[in-house]
Length: 125
Image (cartoon, rainbow, N blue to C red; front, side):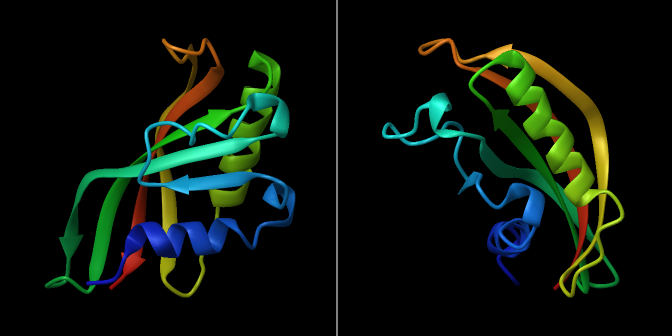
């Protein structure tokens, strides 16, 4: 079975609109050395999913947290992520479908703004 988190991170690193962003796979929050003033950050982790065609196509569901210095910046990061995934069809990542629209929230310990959103992917295994 392929590492879907690695495939997703590898794809996101190729998106020009996200070139300056930081990506943290399989994390709930950015590492301690990150600060929202540093720019956009995306934490994402798999939260389950299924498969089709005897494991040929994996369908993982991912939680994304899109961070920015302000609520507006976090929402800009969310929209840039949506644009990067909408209509995506890379070698391993065949499709992305937003499961819920983003919601602006705040980290309890740091009060950092982020947008929480969920996507389901079709991934070639």
